[in-house]
Length: 113
Length: 112
Image (tube, rainbow over all chains, first blue to last red; front, top):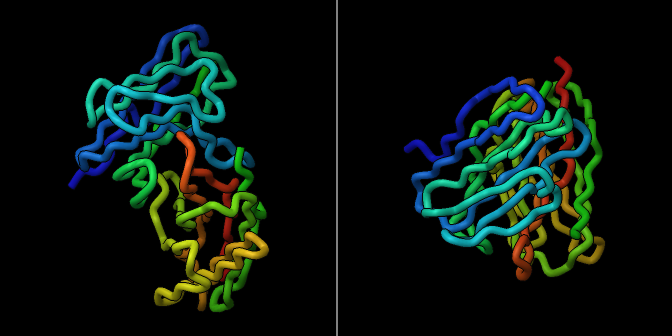
């Protein structure tokens, strides 16, 4: 069982470039999330989707966009990367917005120079 | 938004008990979770407790919930070097479009 797959694992990016982090889950979960993890700040929610076709803004959405065209995929796009977006990004999913264990991907480490 | 707070660091000697604490502000939580993150990896669920419970024990892990004080703790008995990791508490609320909130994480270091 794959669970949640994120790609790429690691990426170095020049400032101003566009970047899409991919996230795919095979558990047919309705709810999906993107978090960034920074030292001393823990996990901060960027965007979420409670079901296919809907998305919502989290705590730190500026500079990021998401789409949820189907149940399995939830890509995160940085339209024009800036150094402050250097972070480790985690995709997560759970059965629905109210119940179930939250499953995490292995993370994508992004460095913006 | 919801505030979930944890201490950033904890060090214990191998074989001792570890107690990781968490406080939260919203009393409408349904589930409270403890996640473990090992270096270079994602978070994995350790245990969880329903908000109508006071305690849950699972092998070396004991979760205590004090709803009156909005305080959650995770006790690890006989702590081992493999327990060194970052531990996150998280709260799931009954309502709201975004209803899952994480603490900042506590880095547990086990000294041999």
